[in-house]
Length: 103
Image (cartoon, rainbow, N blue to C red):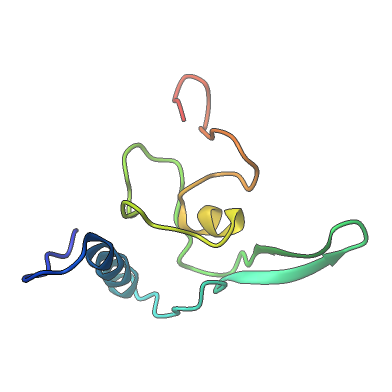
């Protein structure tokens, strides 16, 4: 669902409102960009973020089309794209379940 805002509102603001509406509609009321992420430590990499597997609002990435994503949506890092279902991997490159199913 795309939220239509009457009057003169920028496209970016309309997209932000749509994204927020979708989050609230799914009962995800946390607005912090690092929600559902945990800080881990390793000897080689130092601090890094990883997914908290107990969080119930993960977006699946195994779909065709836009899913619940909004055009021009931005994320602070790759781990955030995985959490929201925008990308299935935390490394660069295309992602898909198989060559036959596509990316």
